[in-house]
Image 1 (cartoon, rainbow over the protein chains, first blue to last red):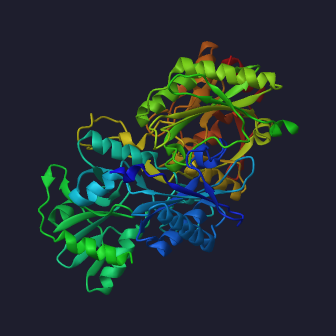
Image 2 (cartoon, chains in turn blue, purple; image 1 turned 60 degrees about the vertical axis):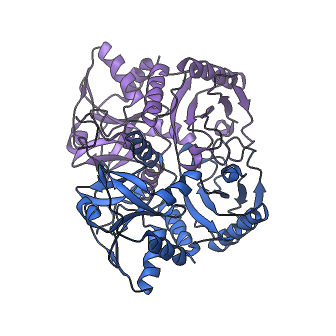
Image 3 (spheres, rainbow over the protein chains, first blue to last red; image 1 turned 45 degrees about the vertical axis):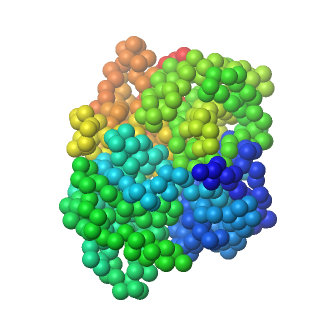
Length: 301
Length: 301
């Protein structure tokens, strides 16, 4: 399909509140001293664009603002980012439109200016994602390899069950080298993705939230602490609850995954992809996948 | 001082082996789809430039190649990077010269091309660094807040005491958001830097290696596992050993820091900065700091 080769729309968002500017994707855009590239010091969000609109906008805005606060970045103006998103999506539609991913990136900016850098990219949904939505994915479960200490004797900290502030746990930062490495590891072992565990407890995918379906009950591991709260899972649970499903945030282990009617990895652009194999175990197809996909489509408005 | 406002020298290093190109730092250089900026998917090294040459070159090249391997990046051509470094430093000298920092950055490159991006920046040593070298620093000790599991029941892994490969522990990646956040945290509490601990064990600074001096013995926590091996500390230990010092890699706790003659944070450009306060405890000045600084200067050639 030629759709993956369509040129992205890039819109530079001026943090000072000036006019947004279209940028030619075939021209360089970021300066060599931008802390986004020299230290990964920035945040991002990825939204689904469908039928000419960015979906689940409020939840992405909330997490974006939360991430900025955790990194001590100037809090982005949600009105400005909403308008810029609409503008970028309108440009995308003018250029032919179709389902797309919309990425917001916001960095601490150039060392030499101290002003944040922000931009929006709208680009086609990758082929691989379309295929995974259709065919499902195989998943390797594996310990994540580190444990976050929730309660620290930190000088001057307020105490409680909060991870230390410098870990910026819960912020969606540009620090995705480990997530990317985990995906390469999975692929090298013949899988599509991983589900991380910690001391047997199911955590999350490399870039997604785990959801199980059993009868009319949806379950996900409790978000927060050392799990990034999932915007797609949250939309799904909110909508499903309103339509008679039972939605629970509960600790689960790999046995619970294997015992569920079905297991899904939820993320903004892949939406819900069905896990068809966990390690060496093929999962039975006992849930009507169409129901879950329709539920999620409706949830995203 | 005006030195901090001198324009950097930027040299683009072509991973394909083509000619290196000077780049005007006042022009954008990186494309919006470079995985270095969208996912922090890349590595870096920072070298000291002194008397017209980059110092400790071999150790930086070794770690650079090791980091690339850990991230599954095409292994950089060390001959090419050495020559490019000499070329960038020569340009710097032509433009006035003086002590500088030289940063190599190497990313997975543009999503749309799949070719890595590499460049070298030579820029003045920041004022703050010059001041810290002179005056020393105050340090907050604090648990890092996470523990790396050294031996994992990972499918297909070779076992042993290696951290899981996707954590890319020991690689110097662009994922420095947490390091930067830790420094902001320290500053907010009235300190210059942090020394992380894990279950009482001293680990490292936010961007440096811990070294203590007691009599004619230098000590550092054992590098590797969850500590980035320090190139500056390694150069110091190698040179000091050859000159009659005893150099040990040993676990230590905060009590050991307080009991040492002196405590230093070692990194490429700051070199060795003396810790003058740990938490609420002022450290006595019982070691001749000049000796350590001269030792390090000699170690760096």
